[in-house]
Image (tube, rainbow, N blue to C red):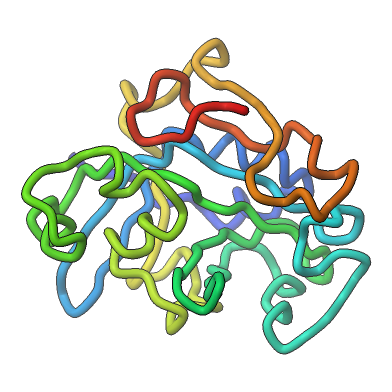
Length: 204
């Protein structure tokens, strides 16, 4: 089956919350050393840099790490969390508006043997790609992909199959995870997950 890459215009929408929700059911693909792998996106979180205390770019903060936030949407933002786990984000919005969507969980669907080898597992299970660091491990994503064009051929996103597109009733919004330092912004319902997915964390 052929899957259509999400066009540049998809990423330029300046409503990062709507983009986080719209990415559910899409497929995240990688081609690493010739191996193609993919997963259906089942959990996301939105980060709106200018006003969101949970964002690395809160208040317009610019650092070497956050410089990609200020580029035009449709590129990857990857970084090391706690110096160990690579987290993958989709930069959205127009240039100089720092917004990003964290991909928190995918359901592996292509290149399963490669995914299992990377995760040192014998079968697909929840902890194969049921967390942001696990997504990157499963799909071979490293910080070397930071700034990559998401309409290119190393890492890209496509619309999902018809039966992978969730209904509104299948989507649950809740507060994001692990951002208590963000004060009142930690309560924003900017985490989106497909209900009953075996790969997502329960809503808190």
